[in-house]
Length: 556
Image 1 (tube, rainbow, N blue to C red):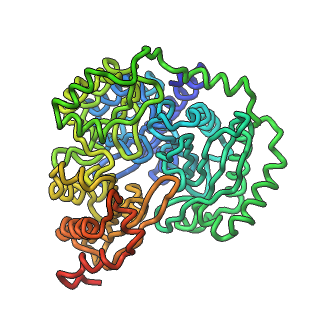
Image 2 (tube, rainbow, N blue to C red):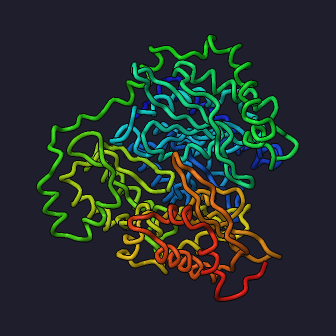
Image 3 (spheres, one colour):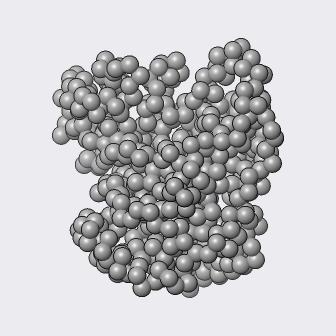
């Protein structure tokens, strides 16, 4: 993984010192809250319902074991013993005292971490899939390009005050596991027949109040022009994006207003002025960054491990976990293993305790190469596990409360912190997620249902990505009370789709029954091996609506 050079380290240290001074002036009253607001947002610090929340950057979701231990220390010493991993592959601490923030940032800087640009109207954390560099279906490793984008966008003065927040994601595999099409800029990385690395550039995606999937703006862009082309897009957005209405300020609104063809012409015209300038990447610069992502010293192992085969045959629970919680690795004898943060009632989705973080760091060192990934589904990934170590890893994961075999299943719920913490939320997310997990606790039944994603957001900001869940739940306010709107048919990946509202909203108490009704309709109409989202596409909304609304009249 990438290691800071002296420039990275100096930048982060100077930012810590700068923010320490700003915090001191805020506490003394020299800075008003209005003056302090943009300063703290640039350092990932929000004011939530009960306390400050600090969002820490985890670039493209990659952590070293030592960094995870530092996060555990922060959780234990400065929070209430846990952190919340987010859909942007970051971590949030929800109970932070302002006076302590500079000390926390100092700790982060010691292990090459920071909170810069995790909030504010700037380029946010660059993301890619949690299996980058190891997935068997990967065309090439996207992490060097993600790191180049991170370095270029960090404290880039031209793009620190955009009309609205800006998100970029990369995918370089056959399957899109990075939700590229819901980003402001999405980049599909691939090679042509001659082996040249190229980019398919997508723009104008985003969820929130107006969910829109991105559209292609450029095909076969040579990788050397990555920065200049992204810069051209950002310049057009910075120039024309609305600043008078934050609900209409995202690039998706600009693209929709201009039309993709007109927007593309603006970008191409801007790009012609800068394409051959200093932003053009060189082979030497790419290689400088790529050298940090050299493959670990893998052992030469057989692809079939006889010990693993015996363990699978002997222990049905372990076999079930392997079937859902591992991904095929590009190196024979290895797999990527997913540790679920969705145990059900014992913890909210995405929450991990300090003790669990320390345990994960230990497991990463014992059964891998000391590296951990954060998936945008809020789970943790050990990317390089020998097949022969899987049984021992599974036992340790179960002991730590991270061994639930539900990846991709109904109880692998994606959820924001919701109204329990967030000042923007209309309704709570965590109790709804846990009520659903309690209702669907039968793992045999879940495995029979197969792939079925359920996403929950507490408000229209869609931090839980409810629009692209096979089942989506959105918290809404009705005359001061909490209600929930349900969508079905959403999907992520290269066949992304936005879910459609099935009808009037429901009370919190009704939601488990509603989900049960949707699932019953699916099982009634399902064809052999068909997924929930495929059934929705085939039969439409009406059978689901009839089942859900049959029992009682629901208020409009």
